[in-house]
Image 1 (cartoon, rainbow, N blue to C red):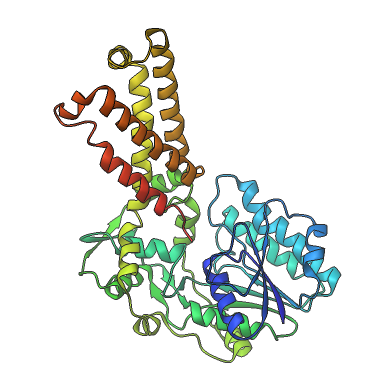
Image 2 (image 1 turned 90 degrees about the vertical axis):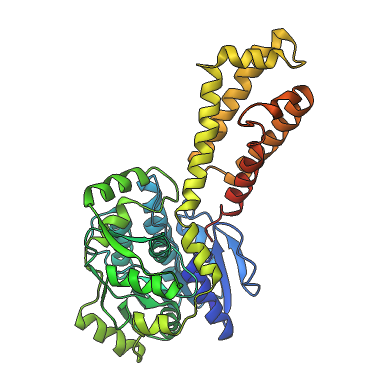
Length: 427
């Protein structure tokens, strides 16, 4: 079959591509950025899902396509309108184009629990489900529970991060909400089986085991090979405050969407589980069985340990650049001019240089804070750190001998910037 997959750079989509490639299908991968290199057999089409909201865009891409699998989605975005474009308007245009072109089948990857929570992530996904069911096209809507596997992304990465903290496992409240995690291999198997299913299906893709969030975290920590830790309950008020702040920080590990979705049981009913098994003819493994058949490695442990340190590193570097710019202009303006007076910079240009460098520091700090083109910003920061250090070394070498060695601190700052850039990509 010729299969078009949207959101093909995502954790789930890449696993689907891997399985379907092995099965001999031809893959057309629509991605926002270049596909990562371990999917060499896919035909890649760069697609901006905030702009591809018209049927005419998709019509030419569907030539010779048999099946469309929609995996595109974002869990958090600062602008609600962006969420609706990605989850509703772009897929709506794609699905309408499928109907016009007579596409054999649409498989839409949704999320379990979207009918229980009133947040833009859930309401936009629920809206596109309802639209798809009105079209004259065979379709399967798959609502996965918490997806886990050898890799991780999204909610599973957050869980691993919580498990990777030293000494304690923070719990959101009492963490007694139930989950039904599903292994990534079982989920991709469901997708593969759904290629040939006729008619319309709504499948809640869950594993056999119902397990509390608390026990999920305890089992994950044990699987990662960390020492036992004490589970402590975090009062809901602190979680809510952190979630509100996280709404305004790109790629924040905490957001109101995640908190609200985690606040309710995220499980399938007996009827939904029977419907799943009747359509796929196998039982997805339970969470405990799934972990028993996976081996954690050092990369898993690094990821867990670095999960919360990664945003803290970025925020601390942002703070340093912003604070450096502000302190140089306001309380320390006189000191800054005294420093520049020891250089070869002409007196008439010293105020201009001081303000220019200070404003540049603040802008670089703000760009880092809001995760704006972090690789480019980090490169500029690295160049400036090296330039500052070299200039001071040649023009004012005595600063290497000052108490607390302020210039020497540029060396670990440069390394920290390199690490921030290396950890920039989530995929």
